[in-house]
Amino acid sequence: MDPHLLRTFVAVARHGSFSAAARDLGYTQAAVSQHIAALESDLKVSLLTRRPVVATEAGRRLLEHAAPILLRLDAARADVTRLAGAPRGRLHVGTSPLAAPGLAAALATLLGPMPRLELTVRVAARETVAAEVASGTLDIGLVDGLAAPSDPLRLSEVSPLTAIGVGEEQPVVILPRSHPLAGRTGLRLADLIDARWIDAPGTAAPLGDLRRAGGAEGFRAALRYEGTDTGTLVALAAAGHGLTVLPGPAAGQFPGVAGVPITLPRLVHRTELLHGSIGAGSPAAALATLLAG
Amino acid sequence: MDPHLLRTFVAVARHGSFSAAARDLGYTQAAVSQHIAALESDLKVSLLTRRPVVATEAGRRLLEHAAPILLRLDAARADVTRLAGAPRGRLHVGTSPLAAPGLAAALATLLGPMPRLELTVRVAARETVAAEVASGTLDIGLVDGLAAPSDPLRLSEVSPLTAIGVGEEQPVVILPRSHPLAGRTGLRLADLIDARWIDAPGTAAPLGDLRRAGGAEGFRAALRYEGTDTGTLVALAAAGHGLTVLPGPAAGQFPGVAGVPITLPRLVHRTELLHGSIGAGSPAAALATLLAG
DNA sequence: CCAAGTTACGAGTCACGTAAGGATT
DNA sequence: AATCCTTACGTGACTCGTAACTTGG
Image (cartoon, rainbow over all chains, first blue to last red; front, top):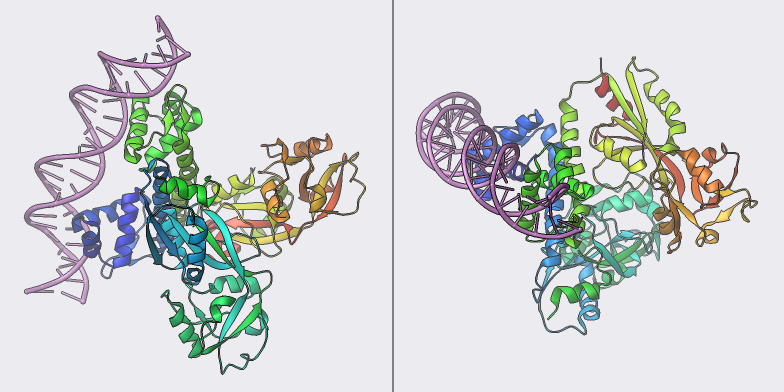
């Protein structure tokens, strides 16, 4: 199970085509065919159907493992390399959409006494930010999510990252003005189990977190939003496509909707600063090493 | 970063010797030397000092990643292979020490209506059991630990495993009879932060869990116990080497010590049945596939 | 000077590209 | 017939073992 083969397998499964994967990876398509054949004969299992090219049951299973493994491999390389890497004087920062408003403040705190530097900021889905901080594409990440007070966020545990909490907010449910519950001053999770929800895992609180908090099924997704634009998400909620949970301060900024505080059993909306240097102490210290000079 | 190279690196670091690692892995020592050289030149970092052979800062960093990666790789192979693997008629079961008393009952429930089969049982540290279930060495694992009520145990997230809760118990602190607190009918965690503790991560509740529950530092380990024998652990506690936390029922069995129920904020001692078939529904169904015929 | 890691070199293997060969729509 | 995957084959690269070399205690 050479990582090269895994990488090829993932590409083929994603493209649904050997030739497309080959083009993507810079191989000939014969090489891709050989890669898949090698994997299949190594595991003694058929991983893909041909014509059309679709992952089999075993292939789907392998796909679930492959991405984390490849990510971890990249993270390991990045982590080790970071130590020796010459400071670059550039800082790549990523943020999840709902953490973005806090970005300026967080950077000011960190960089206040810092020298000039080239700063790049990018907004991406929560898990994307975490993955890119792990793999070294980003130096720093700001992510938000639901967690027990003063508990670390549970990001997919592909690689150990250092997380520092930078804020906790009251979670608020976004409802269309016309919604029967829109006038309430507070809600309980149980009131909303049977509502229609928007599943926006990269942007809003993931439904899985709500489901776990509620200890119940429900929280059926009526719509899945894969973008990272909060305005669009709120517009969808305003149009009645479903409910979503935002941190309180963010909710106040949108006129067309009602934001009702929700009592979640022991959950707050938490924002964390992520960086990759496991043992590096304070983020300022890590930054200093990163930027020095 | 070929897994072969990583495996070699891990072996060298563990043995503290190229030659010993070579013997262990069935390579010549020249090959091992080349492996390490290849890794170092790939990462452009020195990973080991020679003479004596010790991991450098970067090497230690890599070691933290290597073990989980290799484990995940094994787990992926096992997971994919499991699907196609012919039922073996043999069942390898592992259990953490404190879950062992429940093993008979759990197996009876599962296997009651099952045909005869060859059964192997082994006791090992909690994380070992989880790792071996993931990598397919074990078919089924029974593990215990501290967790919020009806929350899954947080085992090291190397590989997704299906977990089914099979029991929750009141945690109890084991104290020598002569201990000033031994007469109490109940304790709070705060009473014990400054006590001397035994760190027995494979057997008792890991100190890290207590520390997290207490939201504090403290819980200094006076002694580390790496074995998996509950009797020995309790004997150490009885002799005053430190405190440890066991599930209530287990604590009653030992005469020389006092077991005092402890109120942990939202934590219970939980036992779970682990198996590897991610989507396989009930454990009975998984077992049926495993054993069929 | 001995134990232990490195370097040199050759043999076998492996992985890739080219090109020809099926198969499916 | 066209598209797409597989197979055959040759070349270049890689990996490992043997053996000579180097270094540190």
